[in-house]
Image: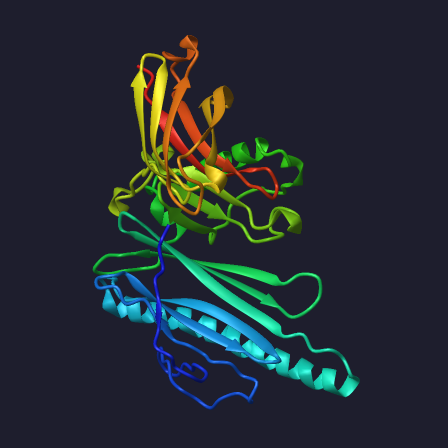
Length: 356
């Protein structure tokens, strides 16, 4: 997980963007406006910093965290990327302020109650090899039962001549990457308890994706392949399962870590495996499963020395039935936690096991 430390420099007023990325004081909103701050992540040598827009009036409540890259190798590309991200953010801000103002006029004429329109935005940056993945999540609420969520994904080659990376670019030229990924996604859907709710046929040419720790993550929008109550489906595919098909130019590593588990090491002792590392999970509780293909050959749960959001130490012994120790198909260890809302496995970390 990327830690985002920030400090306020107390700029009052709205933030505008002109021909390039610009942050400036402008005229204040009416007297009910609270302070708008610019917040910088000032860490020497960091890859990016955070700029925050905070605006609260009777009409709008805006809370935005916007990434500004400062450590990419290609400075020309870096400036262009920052400009694109900032323009998108400021356009969202402009649109919701305009919509809120229009509704406020109608509400005043008709004696309706005015509930502030909401706009929130946050982001996540992960790196692996020569690739930087950025996910920007935006939520707007203008009344009614539900708001609207949107996720924008940027994958950048952090090289002397940087460029935007499409999913197809990750793979060697002779690889049918769609067939490969479709098979894995369909396999994961077949194991889902609500598999009948999925309407998936194939990924697209412009499929949203990110590289998160040791996984290639395929993202879908809300309603795209599932009913709305299932949110925004994502499929994590361990890089180690794809490594023979990936282009070596990206230097992708199959790291044994994610947002919930890190520094995981597995030591074999006969038919037993000792798992050590750290976990950041609810009340320290985690689950594990060892699989041979689609067959689960061992499963259980454990407790880390501390519960999230702190990192707790993990030490878990797992016993494997003798008959699975010399099978042709490799065993895999899955570490995961259970989502407290829907009871589904989340933050799954998949690790290949040596059986010989």
